[in-house]
Amino acid sequence: MKEGTTYVGLDAHQASTNGAIRLASGEVLEDRFATTSEGIRRWVRRLKRRCKGRIVCCYEAGPMGYALQRTLVSLGVECIVIAPSLIPFKPGDRIKTDRRDARKLAELLAAGLLTEVHVPTPEQEAIRDLCRAREAVKGDQKRIQHRLSKFLLRRAIRWTGGRKMWTRAHREWLRGRRLEHAADQDTLDDHLLALEQNEGRLTALDEKLASWATQEPYAEAVAWLRCFRGIDTLTALSVAAEIHDWPRFPSPRALMAYLGMVPSESSRGGKFQRGGLTKADNSRVRRLLI
Image (cartoon, rainbow, N blue to C red):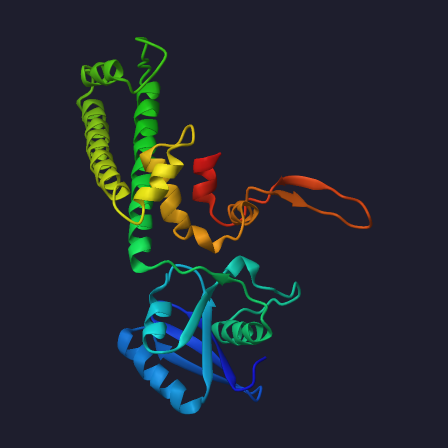
């Protein structure tokens, strides 16, 4: 631990945040503040009056995103976001509270036992969320198709016009169905309407993403990734948006470890045993690449 450095563990929630302040002397103070812009500013002023020298804060990555980290950095306080899955824990510790979590983070941060998460810029996060929005719409499309196909299966209505479903011919066949009961027809029409609306959303998102793929800083990365077989514009942009900072990986091996595409290993007592992929960290890029 560096002399004169104050380590702060934050257990952040939507309404309020618990903080544990570990002073350079080793004493730990507890604090709490509202997770709002004004509440954070007041807490930072109070923290700077109480602690002299370097101040380093940390909190777990999660639904709170990176807004708290960016606010603290803008106020002149160092803050890192840490990986929750890599936090050391005691198997016998059965008590979990906000105060204990904050104190634990402060102690582990001072000991250097936490793994930092790379924080994207607001621009990088915006493109990443746009790619994830497209992925969510694609998932909605699959769910609508599944509900529609199972509805027709329960009514003993089968598609016999070919091997593939959801083609143009299959769509025309669906639109031409007239069911005996009016309620069933209303259900079919609603499913078809939902499918058409979802496809319109998907087309609009594809056009927006294709436009962003031609702009910097993604144009060069997308162009290089498209050289690989099976990767086109949308996949290339999604990969680039999720990784968003290629130079932070010193080698291809480090990148593959980040994506969880390296074999697991359990080697002890002179015996070497390797298993399946570790499947660590970013599952979206791993799914796109496999």
